[in-house]
Image (cartoon, rainbow, N blue to C red):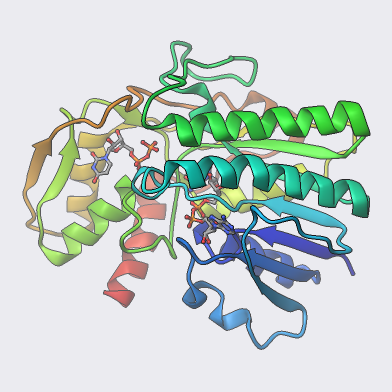
Amino acid sequence: MKCVLVTGGAGFLGSHLCDRLIQSGNHVICLDNFFTGTKDNIQHLMGDSHFELEEREIIWPYIKNVDEIYNLACPASPVHYQYDPVKTINTSVLGAINMLELAKGAGAKILQASTSEVYGDPVIHPQTEDYWGNVNPIGVRSCYDEGKRCAETLCMDYHRQMGVIVKIIRIFNTYGPRMAQNDGRVVSNFIVNALLGKDIEIYGDGTQTRSFQYVDDLIEGMIRVMNTEDEFTGPVNLGNPGEFTMLELANLVLELTGSKSDIVFSTLPKDDPRKRKPNITLAKTKLDWEPTIPLREGLLKTIDYFRSIL
Ligand code: NAD
Ligand code: UDP
């Protein structure tokens, strides 16, 4: 039985990953400071003898004998990562150092949850892994983008310099059950407001695009990346190449919820990427992976979830 550490394990993605790892017969340690994660997300695992909760800060060193580490701890929604930007950078950079040191000491493999945000406001479309990105280093999003870029750098340097087995995944916008009601990202905002009959607020004119991946597809991809041969470091894009404008998303949410909410427009936040879509050729060839859940189907599952908690 493997001992697997999941940092950020009480968050949206982390809690689904913990479920999957427990189901596959692993011993799971969930490290989280509950900044954006909740006990509700992991409540159903608490009685399991193979599930351990470590309520702690990733910015403090941590020593444990583990076989694998999935490093997900970091606020991911712009609202939350911009709340305390210095803390966000510390979480990404010191967090990565602490987890890489842990991996080095324990001889463990580590998978780093990076992001499509490393491409910034991309001028190459769709984005391939060899694109170096277009990130504003001094803008309001850079605490997240540059923190994640630095974490990638640290992974590659620990790999080259110390032989640590690292895997970098670049996750594109992922949604699904257990997103927090106040998460602030577009899918949960639109669904929650549609269900409550409140206005759906589009930032800007709604022509900006994103590619939305359902959580189960991502979790499958993460496990496959962890199981690649030791030499494979990535980075590898994990996302659904379906590309939608925010106006299309708003209309689809209205249709699927049957809501009578109005769509209203407000100011576009600074440095908001204009378009984003993954090229997933590498994931397809290397992992034999591609998303299986189309947006409409994933939204219906997510709407069911929010209906049940609202
Ligand atoms: P989330 O906010 O639900 O989860 C983040 C988790 O990390 C939370 O449980 C939070 O409490 C924990 N955390 C934050 N700071 C911490 C700290 N200093 N110490 C310990 N724990 C801390 O967000 P998510 O969508 O589940 O994202 C998980 C990871 O995936 C993040 O690293 C994020 O950058 C990455 N990612 C997510 C997406 C997406 O679309 N969901 C896209 C790209 C990358
Ligand atoms: N957005 C929006 N209304 C909202 C939340 C977000 O129009 O209530 C827009 C946001 O400006 C961006 C897109 O939706 O263009 C995706 O935003 P999100 O915060 O979900 O993810 P990210 O920008 O990090 O990809």
